[in-house]
Length: 115
Image (cartoon, one colour):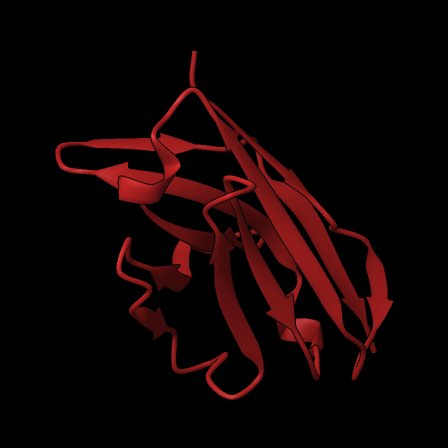
């Protein structure tokens, strides 16, 4: 059974930092591309950051220079370090694991940034 367990979402003030974690089980973590999407109330889900099995990264323009994605294959965990947080970063953040043609999703973790 595949599980992606996100953690680290909390209420934080604007300008603050958070690190989200997503621990995977039931998959061969190292061969999967990993990433984070987010969904704010009333908005579509958007890709925040991704990292391939070869550790190539990609970021949404809105988070470039502020967020960093990384992975630890030994711990089957992907991280999202979020700095200089803004109120518009408020959303539910979802972790995913992808290897063609299958994508697995976590349940999401709420990040709230107060102004």
